[in-house]
Image 1 (cartoon, rainbow over the protein chains, first blue to last red):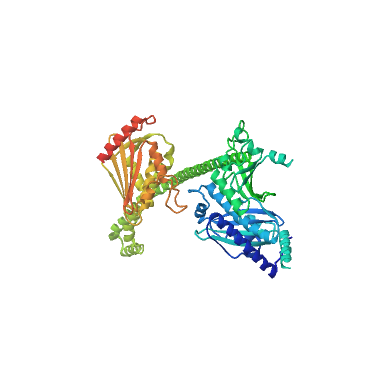
Image 2 (cartoon, helix red, strand yellow):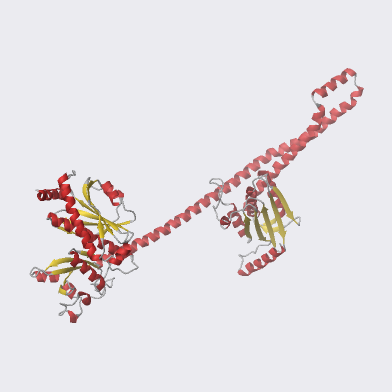
Length: 194
Length: 442
């Protein structure tokens, strides 16, 4: 039922460039808020199967997971993977008082994801001139069994890693788009390239 | 119209400017403000108007203004951002309102001023329901745990029952076999007696013939001599008595063992009677040495007879289990020593072996049912637990001390005359006193 819509070389490059810019903006936003330097990895773009997506998310050990859906011109989900290590330093930067309660930690995770995912998405949609609205994030525990039962076969995945320089904290943001949105994005990319 | 609509919406809507001062509040917020504040709320910093989570609110507002991106907060992590009472102050279970909050960046259409819009949702009902569910699931979990424990207990009880059943049937089997063996042993031993007599007679006849040999003719003499010779008469004569004596001996031992076996299996249901501990010990040694021949067995007692009032079956079973353990502890060489000490009110039986000993970490658990160090299928771990129960029944005490690679001493103390009633605290004290006396004399 779902056919992968592979991006051609040009579209891919364009998307990569757009991602670079929007991710940079996201990192900037976060850096501004917590007043510290943030490094970002080069965004990766790939098509994955549900099982591949699962292992992609589980590359990081001892992590927190969240998901957040977005609607508008394009539909999809953002999944974030946050390392447990270094979270308390980030909490301090975010003006939380030690010791952190379980609720504090959850709140920090959700807020971090919201900021980063929101900034990434806003940047990307801005440049593609698309409107998107991000819904609230929720904590999420990926289960292999559930991933195996997912209804789609392939999805476009954009992945980027944020690293906070002064602590061991790192966070990965994974964007997934549904088929329809992918087609839409391809069109938009073509328009931009034309 | 929209003004009215926004005012009456069942969610809190508040708008603040970049200095966190309130620009607009809808009825949801206003209804919850103190009376005197309702008309003069504008231009007041939001954190002054709603105290409590000011720091948090400021941080979130700042993030929205800086990032121009919505921010969310949930009741699970931060239930009461605004210090509002539950909307059901009379009938509700919760006293404070649970809130979900969303802050959106907006812009004034006319001035272009950056503003933040706070949406506040009352989720008290949901939260209350959720928490009730959680409590319920916790209660269920607890109950489930309790049930699991109970099932485990039942399992143990069941296997104990099965074990007891097995033991009982083994005992019956042994008794049956012992009875069956007794019959053939009876006639074999009678026949053997007769055989012995006949053999004596035959030898007498032969010897008589030999003595009369002088009077025979040479031819006859030669023939008889040859007959004696060809049948190895001299050897036969020497051997036959020995063979019969040995067989009789062996048969006596078989009888003893069967007798003991019968004693042990049949007497379990007998009531309280006089038991001679010395005789029991002798019986035990015969019985156990038949199966475990490696250790040397010694018995020590100053008196011929030491009698206690007790139930012979369980008492013997207890001593036997301890003895078997002792015997199994000895691999190559060693001894088992039984000492019976008599005092006016108590009897102390010490079973000492020079075997492998018990590791300290196991020492505490040896009386636990089903505790065994033997490989699976070779021991049920019931021996000492059965012994413990039996000695308890006799209001006695059993204690064990051991050194690894040196040996083990099991000391059993039983009162000669068990108290007829269940022991009162006085009796116990008496017992204790007696015991200390006893251990001093020992």
